[in-house]
Image (tube, rainbow, N blue to C red):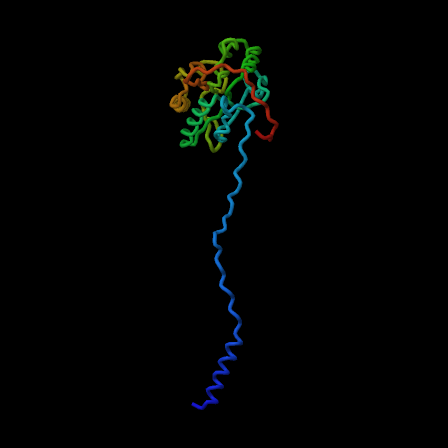
Length: 237
């Protein structure tokens, strides 16, 4: 091979090598992975009552419906008794009601509350309007409502809110409302039986004269005069 041709080849290779773009330096991996901080926790709930003594029922399950009649004039006295409507119970009673409600959900049913804890001063207001022990407990003796251990309620269909037919309206005073009355349509008797079984399963007892009234069968709780605070519409709780 001629020497001149060999030198030309070397020169060509040298020129091609010099014309290449410099290679980018390798990307070095970070020594430690980048840690994304978790989002801040939601703010703690604010309570305007002593949670060791009371539980607001709808805080446990917002699908429990409220129709608190004594906070309106839609009651047998046609007078507003409560300054505002909120539904409170002693914690153990509230938890028992929640268990009833959860059991009923499998049937697309749930609870609708007519009256819950009734403070002593409100019991006095009822007595002042209707001092008749057949319908209103004498405040001197006290009501289980004022112990946070009695419930006036009914059953509704969860998806529509429609009440099950129990034969009479709430606060109907007559034998048709008695739990011992059997001369009623078959559907009404079925609904009452379902209702009573659901409540009794979790520690509630019926009374003879009112299908809607149940007493908690746990330890006898103390009477209370505590009155819940009222909250403006849409206000924080």
